[in-house]
Length: 115
Figure 1 (cartoon, rainbow, N blue to C red):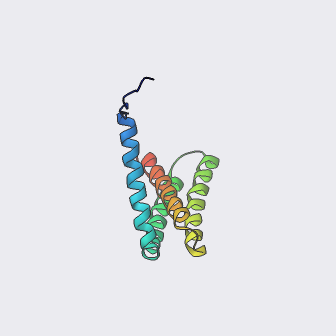
Figure 2: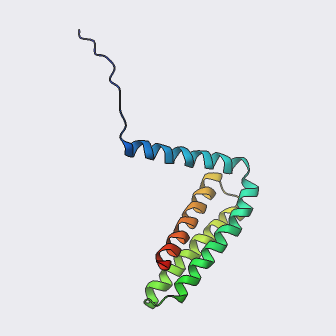
Figure 3: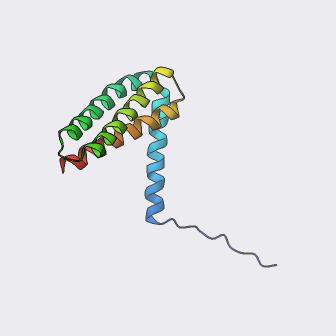
């Protein structure tokens, strides 16, 4: 019977970057879980301000009315969904994920419309 030497598995740069992103996400999630009440309160203010700035930029833009209103709808729904999860005291991971989605979507809208 042949014995094979253990092969070392090398990760590509893409996998290393992905694992670092996952590690940062997990660290942030654990920090959020440990102090959820305080972070949720601060995050409501932050994501509401960012969402309102995104909605303002959308309403000030010169684009088609239907598409603009759909984007305003999604910005509003994501902000309201996060606020509802905080008020309903849902699990930390759900609350944290909705916070990230809301912040990233609003930031993306702001970046796209400022460029």
